[in-house]
Picture 1 (cartoon, rainbow, N blue to C red):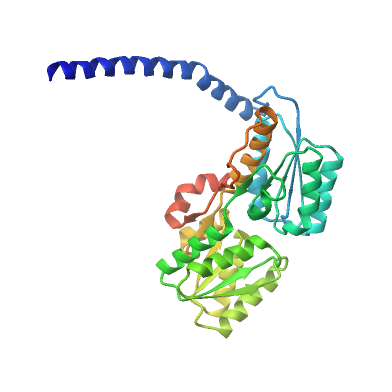
Picture 2: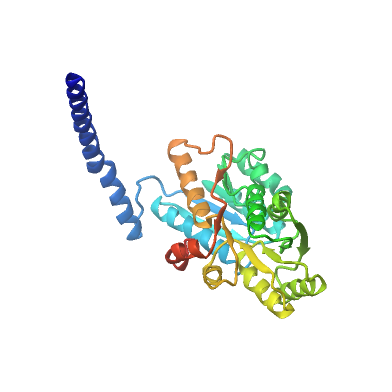
Amino acid sequence: MARVRTGVRVVGAVLATVLGASLAGCSSTGGKRAEERAKAAEAGRPAVSTPRWTFAMVTHAGDGDTFWDIVQKGAKEAAAKDNINFVYSHDDQAQQQAQFVQNAIDQKVDGIVVSLAKPEALKDVVAKAVKAGIPVITVNSGSAQSAAYGALTHIGQDETIAGEAVGSELNKRGRKKTICVLHEQGNVGHEQRCAGAKKTFSGTMENLYVEGTNMPSVQAAIQAKLQADPSVDAILTLGAPFAPTAVKAKEAAGSKAEVDTFDLNDSVARDLKSGALGFAVDQQPYLQGYQAIDLLWLYRYNADVLGGGRPVLTGPQIVTAAEAAELEEYIKRGSR
Protein backbone atom coordinates (compact mmCIF):
# COMPACT_ATOMS: atom_id res chain seq x y z
CA MET A 1 0.00 0.00 0.00
CA ALA A 2 2.94 2.29 0.69
CA ARG A 3 4.08 1.80 -2.90
CA VAL A 4 0.63 2.68 -4.21
CA ARG A 5 0.58 5.87 -2.20
CA THR A 6 4.07 6.73 -3.41
CA GLY A 7 2.96 6.10 -6.98
CA VAL A 8 -0.02 8.37 -6.49
CA ARG A 9 2.26 11.09 -5.16
CA VAL A 10 4.56 10.72 -8.16
CA VAL A 11 1.70 10.87 -10.63
CA GLY A 12 0.30 13.86 -8.75
CA ALA A 13 3.68 15.55 -8.90
CA VAL A 14 3.98 14.89 -12.63
CA LEU A 15 0.45 16.22 -13.24
CA ALA A 16 1.17 19.28 -11.14
CA THR A 17 4.32 19.93 -13.17
CA VAL A 18 2.47 19.50 -16.47
CA LEU A 19 -0.44 21.66 -15.34
CA GLY A 20 1.91 24.27 -14.02
CA ALA A 21 3.71 24.40 -17.34
CA SER A 22 0.40 24.59 -19.18
CA LEU A 23 -0.87 27.38 -16.98
CA ALA A 24 2.37 29.24 -17.34
CA GLY A 25 2.04 28.89 -21.10
CA CYS A 26 -1.54 30.15 -20.99
CA SER A 27 -0.66 33.12 -18.83
CA SER A 28 2.22 34.07 -21.12
CA THR A 29 0.19 33.77 -24.33
CA GLY A 30 -3.60 33.65 -24.09
CA GLY A 31 -3.71 35.57 -20.84
CA LYS A 32 -1.38 38.21 -22.19
CA ARG A 33 -3.42 38.57 -25.36
CA ALA A 34 -6.63 38.89 -23.36
CA GLU A 35 -5.02 41.61 -21.25
CA GLU A 36 -3.87 43.44 -24.36
CA ARG A 37 -7.38 43.22 -25.87
CA ALA A 38 -8.89 44.62 -22.67
CA LYS A 39 -6.42 47.54 -22.60
CA ALA A 40 -7.07 48.29 -26.26
CA ALA A 41 -10.83 48.28 -25.74
CA GLU A 42 -10.51 50.62 -22.73
CA ALA A 43 -8.42 53.00 -24.83
CA GLY A 44 -11.02 52.92 -27.61
CA ARG A 45 -8.73 51.05 -29.96
CA PRO A 46 -9.75 47.87 -31.77
CA ALA A 47 -8.34 44.75 -30.17
CA VAL A 48 -8.16 42.78 -33.41
CA SER A 49 -6.48 43.18 -36.78
CA THR A 50 -9.42 41.98 -38.89
CA PRO A 51 -10.92 44.24 -41.61
CA ARG A 52 -13.11 47.21 -40.74
CA TRP A 53 -16.44 45.45 -41.33
CA THR A 54 -19.76 47.26 -41.05
CA PHE A 55 -22.57 45.68 -39.01
CA ALA A 56 -26.07 47.16 -38.88
CA MET A 57 -28.45 46.65 -35.96
CA VAL A 58 -32.15 47.35 -36.55
CA THR A 59 -34.56 47.08 -33.62
CA HIS A 60 -38.20 47.73 -32.81
CA ALA A 61 -37.28 50.15 -30.01
CA GLY A 62 -39.44 53.17 -29.40
CA ASP A 63 -37.93 56.52 -28.49
CA GLY A 64 -36.68 56.78 -24.92
CA ASP A 65 -36.74 53.05 -24.16
CA THR A 66 -33.91 52.53 -21.66
CA PHE A 67 -33.84 48.79 -22.34
CA TRP A 68 -32.52 49.39 -25.84
CA ASP A 69 -29.96 51.88 -24.55
CA ILE A 70 -28.41 48.95 -22.68
CA VAL A 71 -28.55 46.71 -25.77
CA GLN A 72 -26.79 49.44 -27.73
CA LYS A 73 -24.12 49.86 -25.07
CA GLY A 74 -23.22 46.19 -25.30
CA ALA A 75 -23.20 46.26 -29.09
CA LYS A 76 -21.04 49.39 -29.25
CA GLU A 77 -18.48 48.02 -26.83
CA ALA A 78 -18.21 44.75 -28.77
CA ALA A 79 -17.92 46.75 -32.01
CA ALA A 80 -15.10 48.87 -30.59
CA LYS A 81 -13.22 45.74 -29.55
CA ASP A 82 -13.80 43.95 -32.86
CA ASN A 83 -12.91 46.86 -35.19
CA ILE A 84 -16.51 47.08 -36.39
CA ASN A 85 -18.25 50.10 -37.88
CA PHE A 86 -21.52 49.89 -35.96
CA VAL A 87 -24.69 51.40 -37.45
CA TYR A 88 -27.87 51.50 -35.36
CA SER A 89 -31.43 52.32 -36.39
CA HIS A 90 -34.77 51.69 -34.74
CA ASP A 91 -38.49 52.21 -35.08
CA ASP A 92 -41.46 50.76 -33.26
CA GLN A 93 -43.34 50.53 -36.57
CA ALA A 94 -42.53 47.26 -38.33
CA GLN A 95 -42.80 48.76 -41.83
CA GLN A 96 -40.12 51.33 -41.04
CA GLN A 97 -37.98 48.71 -39.38
CA ALA A 98 -38.17 46.63 -42.58
CA GLN A 99 -37.10 49.68 -44.58
CA PHE A 100 -34.05 50.12 -42.36
CA VAL A 101 -33.07 46.50 -43.02
CA GLN A 102 -33.51 47.11 -46.75
CA ASN A 103 -31.27 50.18 -46.47
CA ALA A 104 -28.59 48.04 -44.83
CA ILE A 105 -28.85 45.52 -47.68
CA ASP A 106 -28.55 48.32 -50.27
CA GLN A 107 -25.46 49.62 -48.48
CA LYS A 108 -23.98 46.10 -48.65
CA VAL A 109 -23.16 45.87 -44.96
CA ASP A 110 -21.16 42.89 -43.72
CA GLY A 111 -23.72 41.70 -41.15
CA ILE A 112 -27.17 42.52 -39.81
CA VAL A 113 -28.67 42.19 -36.34
CA VAL A 114 -32.45 42.52 -36.23
CA SER A 115 -35.22 42.11 -33.67
CA LEU A 116 -38.41 40.38 -34.83
CA ALA A 117 -41.15 41.72 -32.58
CA LYS A 118 -43.51 41.53 -35.57
CA PRO A 119 -41.86 38.76 -37.56
CA GLU A 120 -44.23 38.54 -40.52
CA ALA A 121 -43.53 42.15 -41.45
CA LEU A 122 -39.78 41.43 -41.62
CA LYS A 123 -39.84 37.96 -43.15
CA ASP A 124 -39.29 39.01 -46.76
CA VAL A 125 -36.57 41.58 -46.10
CA VAL A 126 -34.62 39.20 -43.85
CA ALA A 127 -34.81 36.62 -46.65
CA LYS A 128 -33.41 39.25 -49.03
CA ALA A 129 -30.45 39.85 -46.72
CA VAL A 130 -29.70 36.13 -46.48
CA LYS A 131 -30.01 35.75 -50.28
CA ALA A 132 -27.58 38.65 -50.71
CA GLY A 133 -25.01 36.72 -48.65
CA ILE A 134 -25.29 38.97 -45.60
CA PRO A 135 -25.17 36.99 -42.34
CA VAL A 136 -28.12 37.78 -40.06
CA ILE A 137 -28.52 37.29 -36.32
CA THR A 138 -31.87 37.91 -34.67
CA VAL A 139 -31.97 39.37 -31.19
CA ASN A 140 -34.47 39.81 -28.37
CA SER A 141 -37.69 38.93 -30.24
CA GLY A 142 -38.54 36.29 -32.82
CA SER A 143 -36.73 33.20 -31.58
CA ALA A 144 -39.40 30.92 -33.04
CA GLN A 145 -38.99 32.38 -36.53
CA SER A 146 -35.25 33.03 -36.52
CA ALA A 147 -34.00 29.75 -38.03
CA ALA A 148 -36.85 29.54 -40.55
CA TYR A 149 -35.96 33.01 -41.82
CA GLY A 150 -32.35 31.95 -42.38
CA ALA A 151 -30.65 33.67 -39.44
CA LEU A 152 -27.44 32.17 -38.06
CA THR A 153 -28.84 32.11 -34.53
CA HIS A 154 -31.07 34.01 -32.11
CA ILE A 155 -29.86 35.73 -28.95
CA GLY A 156 -32.26 36.54 -26.14
CA GLN A 157 -34.52 34.95 -23.60
CA ASP A 158 -37.25 32.49 -24.50
CA GLU A 159 -40.30 34.63 -23.78
CA THR A 160 -42.55 31.69 -22.94
CA ILE A 161 -40.01 30.29 -20.47
CA ALA A 162 -39.60 33.76 -18.97
CA GLY A 163 -43.35 34.05 -18.56
CA GLU A 164 -43.52 30.65 -16.91
CA ALA A 165 -40.86 31.76 -14.43
CA VAL A 166 -43.01 34.79 -13.59
CA GLY A 167 -46.07 32.63 -12.99
CA SER A 168 -44.11 30.41 -10.62
CA GLU A 169 -42.74 33.44 -8.75
CA LEU A 170 -46.23 34.89 -8.35
CA ASN A 171 -47.35 31.55 -6.87
CA LYS A 172 -44.50 31.69 -4.33
CA ARG A 173 -45.67 35.14 -3.32
CA GLY A 174 -49.23 33.96 -2.77
CA ARG A 175 -50.79 36.14 -5.46
CA LYS A 176 -54.30 35.26 -6.64
CA LYS A 177 -55.20 37.70 -9.41
CA THR A 178 -52.79 39.42 -11.79
CA ILE A 179 -53.16 41.83 -14.69
CA CYS A 180 -50.52 41.53 -17.41
CA VAL A 181 -50.04 44.96 -19.00
CA LEU A 182 -49.23 44.76 -22.73
CA HIS A 183 -47.92 48.09 -24.00
CA GLU A 184 -47.35 47.17 -27.67
CA GLN A 185 -50.12 45.37 -29.50
CA GLY A 186 -48.95 42.84 -32.07
CA ASN A 187 -45.63 42.19 -30.31
CA VAL A 188 -45.39 38.38 -30.29
CA GLY A 189 -42.86 38.39 -27.45
CA HIS A 190 -45.23 40.27 -25.17
CA GLU A 191 -48.07 37.89 -25.90
CA GLN A 192 -45.75 34.94 -25.15
CA ARG A 193 -44.72 36.43 -21.81
CA CYS A 194 -48.29 36.82 -20.62
CA ALA A 195 -49.30 33.40 -21.98
CA GLY A 196 -46.33 31.75 -20.27
CA ALA A 197 -47.15 33.42 -16.96
CA LYS A 198 -50.77 32.38 -17.24
CA LYS A 199 -49.70 28.78 -17.89
CA THR A 200 -47.88 28.35 -14.57
CA PHE A 201 -49.80 30.84 -12.43
CA SER A 202 -52.31 29.02 -10.22
CA GLY A 203 -54.46 32.15 -9.85
CA THR A 204 -56.31 34.25 -12.43
CA MET A 205 -54.44 36.33 -14.99
CA GLU A 206 -56.00 38.87 -17.35
CA ASN A 207 -54.36 40.82 -20.16
CA LEU A 208 -54.68 44.60 -20.16
CA TYR A 209 -53.80 46.32 -23.44
CA VAL A 210 -52.58 49.91 -23.13
CA GLU A 211 -51.18 52.59 -25.41
CA GLY A 212 -47.50 52.32 -24.56
CA THR A 213 -46.51 55.57 -26.26
CA ASN A 214 -48.78 57.56 -23.92
CA MET A 215 -47.79 57.16 -20.26
CA PRO A 216 -50.70 59.19 -18.81
CA SER A 217 -53.02 56.90 -20.74
CA VAL A 218 -51.17 53.83 -19.42
CA GLN A 219 -51.56 55.07 -15.84
CA ALA A 220 -55.24 55.84 -16.35
CA ALA A 221 -55.94 52.39 -17.82
CA ILE A 222 -54.22 50.54 -14.97
CA GLN A 223 -55.83 52.78 -12.35
CA ALA A 224 -59.29 52.21 -13.82
CA LYS A 225 -58.79 48.46 -13.84
CA LEU A 226 -57.70 48.43 -10.20
CA GLN A 227 -60.63 50.58 -9.14
CA ALA A 228 -63.07 48.36 -11.04
CA ASP A 229 -61.60 45.16 -9.62
CA PRO A 230 -60.19 45.44 -6.06
CA SER A 231 -59.38 41.70 -6.09
CA VAL A 232 -56.34 42.32 -8.32
CA ASP A 233 -53.29 41.75 -6.09
CA ALA A 234 -50.49 41.86 -8.68
CA ILE A 235 -49.64 44.00 -11.70
CA LEU A 236 -47.11 42.73 -14.23
CA THR A 237 -45.57 45.23 -16.64
CA LEU A 238 -43.53 44.05 -19.62
CA GLY A 239 -40.89 46.78 -19.68
CA ALA A 240 -38.93 48.74 -17.07
CA PRO A 241 -40.25 52.22 -18.08
CA PHE A 242 -43.80 51.09 -17.30
CA ALA A 243 -43.12 49.87 -13.76
CA PRO A 244 -43.08 53.31 -12.05
CA THR A 245 -46.24 54.24 -13.96
CA ALA A 246 -47.94 51.13 -12.60
CA VAL A 247 -46.81 52.10 -9.09
CA LYS A 248 -48.40 55.54 -9.52
CA ALA A 249 -51.63 53.95 -10.80
CA LYS A 250 -51.72 51.60 -7.85
CA GLU A 251 -51.26 54.43 -5.36
CA ALA A 252 -53.88 56.60 -7.05
CA ALA A 253 -56.35 53.71 -6.97
CA GLY A 254 -55.66 52.97 -3.31
CA SER A 255 -54.70 49.43 -4.23
CA LYS A 256 -52.33 47.17 -2.30
CA ALA A 257 -51.40 45.13 -5.40
CA GLU A 258 -47.76 44.19 -5.86
CA VAL A 259 -46.10 45.63 -8.96
CA ASP A 260 -43.64 43.38 -10.80
CA THR A 261 -41.91 43.94 -14.11
CA PHE A 262 -39.78 42.63 -16.90
CA ASP A 263 -36.37 44.24 -17.37
CA LEU A 264 -34.03 46.32 -15.23
CA ASN A 265 -32.91 49.91 -15.13
CA ASP A 266 -31.76 52.30 -12.43
CA SER A 267 -35.31 53.25 -11.47
CA VAL A 268 -36.39 49.62 -11.18
CA ALA A 269 -33.35 48.81 -9.04
CA ARG A 270 -34.20 51.64 -6.63
CA ASP A 271 -37.84 50.57 -6.44
CA LEU A 272 -36.86 46.96 -5.79
CA LYS A 273 -34.64 48.04 -2.91
CA SER A 274 -37.33 50.31 -1.45
CA GLY A 275 -40.03 47.66 -1.74
CA ALA A 276 -42.11 49.61 -4.28
CA LEU A 277 -41.60 46.68 -6.67
CA GLY A 278 -41.70 42.99 -5.83
CA PHE A 279 -39.40 41.52 -8.47
CA ALA A 280 -38.04 42.09 -11.96
CA VAL A 281 -37.16 39.68 -14.76
CA ASP A 282 -33.72 40.36 -16.22
CA GLN A 283 -32.90 39.16 -19.72
CA GLN A 284 -29.46 40.83 -19.78
CA PRO A 285 -29.87 43.29 -22.68
CA TYR A 286 -26.19 44.26 -22.60
CA LEU A 287 -25.33 40.66 -23.32
CA GLN A 288 -27.80 40.54 -26.19
CA GLY A 289 -26.15 43.48 -27.93
CA TYR A 290 -22.60 42.43 -27.14
CA GLN A 291 -23.04 38.81 -28.18
CA ALA A 292 -24.86 39.71 -31.40
CA ILE A 293 -21.96 41.82 -32.66
CA ASP A 294 -19.29 39.48 -31.32
CA LEU A 295 -20.94 36.43 -32.91
CA LEU A 296 -21.21 38.18 -36.28
CA TRP A 297 -17.52 39.02 -36.02
CA LEU A 298 -16.71 35.39 -35.14
CA TYR A 299 -18.74 34.20 -38.12
CA ARG A 300 -16.99 36.58 -40.52
CA TYR A 301 -13.56 35.78 -39.06
CA ASN A 302 -13.80 32.08 -38.32
CA ALA A 303 -17.19 30.77 -39.59
CA ASP A 304 -18.19 30.15 -35.95
CA VAL A 305 -21.86 29.77 -35.01
CA LEU A 306 -23.20 29.31 -31.49
CA GLY A 307 -26.45 27.67 -30.50
CA GLY A 308 -26.44 24.48 -32.55
CA GLY A 309 -29.65 25.56 -34.26
CA ARG A 310 -31.25 26.67 -31.01
CA PRO A 311 -31.48 30.16 -29.46
CA VAL A 312 -28.65 31.39 -27.24
CA LEU A 313 -30.50 32.27 -24.04
CA THR A 314 -29.63 35.36 -21.98
CA GLY A 315 -32.44 34.98 -19.43
CA PRO A 316 -34.62 34.90 -17.49
CA GLN A 317 -33.25 35.78 -14.07
CA ILE A 318 -35.64 36.76 -11.27
CA VAL A 319 -34.21 39.81 -9.49
CA THR A 320 -35.47 40.83 -6.04
CA ALA A 321 -34.28 43.51 -3.62
CA ALA A 322 -31.23 41.45 -2.56
CA GLU A 323 -30.08 40.79 -6.13
CA ALA A 324 -30.70 44.41 -7.13
CA ALA A 325 -28.27 45.55 -4.44
CA GLU A 326 -25.65 43.12 -5.75
CA LEU A 327 -26.13 44.36 -9.35
CA GLU A 328 -26.38 48.04 -8.44
CA GLU A 329 -22.94 49.11 -9.70
CA TYR A 330 -23.57 47.45 -13.07
CA ILE A 331 -27.05 48.93 -13.35
CA LYS A 332 -25.72 52.42 -12.64
CA ARG A 333 -23.11 52.15 -15.37
CA GLY A 334 -25.81 51.06 -17.80
CA SER A 335 -24.74 47.49 -18.46
CA ARG A 336 -27.53 45.63 -16.57
